[in-house]
Amino acid sequence: MSLGTLYSVPYQATGKRIRAVAAFAGLKLDSPEGYVHFETNKTPEFLAKFPHGKIPAFEGADGFKLFESSAIARYVAALAPNSTLLGSDLKEAALVDQWCSVADSEIAQYIYLVLQLTRGSIPYSKPVHNTLVERAVRALTTVDKHLSTRTYLVTERITLADLAVASVVQVAAEYVIDPELKAKLPNVVRHAETILNHPLVKDVFGPINFCEKAAQFVPPKKEKEAKPAAAPTPKAEKKPAPKPTADDDDDEDDNLVPEEPKAKNPLDSLPKSTFNLEDWKRAYSNKETRGPGGALEWFYQNFDKAGFSVWRVDFKYNNELTQTFMSSNLIGGFFNRLEASRKYLFGSMGVLGQTNDSIISGALILRGQEAIPVVNVAPDFESYEYKKLDLENPEDKAYFEAALAWDLELEGKKWVDGKNFK
Image 1 (cartoon, rainbow, N blue to C red):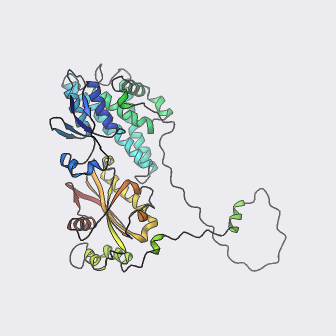
Image 2: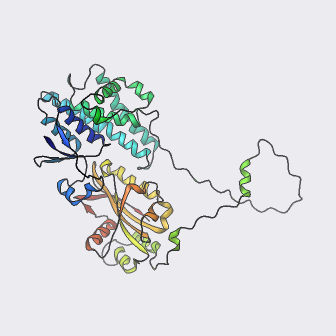
Image 3: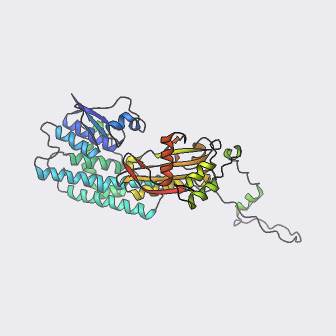
């Protein structure tokens, strides 16, 4: 008989951990039929069950509902008959919780931030990257030292702590634990390989793959700057050209090739609009947002809905967000990468919620009736969802105004920080 349904996706490390707990304990968990991530978990039906909209999420056969991976894993472990997954007394149970906390707070948190940095989701900083790696390695070293005198973390049998740490090390192996670091963590490696290859959970976790090179940030290539035209010089008597030498700069021949004309942006071909985006940006900067004579009043008096459109924008991966200031930096990075569309776009986006429980949302005013031609200049534009707003719809209008006034509240989460693109 199944315990219930676990909403997760195959690649989710925390979801693997929960399924491994169930498999180790001889319990069954069903998978939801037709679940599509970032779609199903945004439906009213899903949010009615799990208001936070996150996975993993658990719905028991008896109707009991639970979210947050650590809570679900502990609950499933406690249901196992004759299980020692949580220890046999209060002290062992506390030690299990201790190592689960180390896995999530001292290793996984920093590994996922490294991934966000190296993938460009957060504005890259080498010192920050180094600090995050150092903190993760410090915790891994602590685990390695602890395991140097024992097979498992808490008792002489596998506990939830072992499954938690191994699931995190599996992720770290792929992105951070290169050959040099692997050699410094022999006990962590031995432990992870022992747990992940256990017959009861091997099919759940899959193989552990150590990287040959730790994840690194690769900055986007910069276009080659055109060389400035040489200043005109008085006509001089023609002299024989010197013979070329090995030290001659072959790049000088590039000046002989006419510069390729820049392609015209299709947005420039749209019919002329009566709405001046630069005037709006000035109005927004210099006026109170709400109230008589405010920026919103100016907007409604001047907006041209045929030439411009208004959009809601939501970050797709809110479950990866941790510190709110880092989420705010992520918005700043996105706005920086939208620079090429500055004359077509205005944005107001913010972080709502609190540390480890936040979302990113906001509003855009952009040229034309489609968002993608404006935002696709940013390499990470696909990390966001875009929904066109109808300002004649009271709900859409209220959302738009709140996003601009920085008092937006969603899912019980209040606005804590914001940025403008103008």
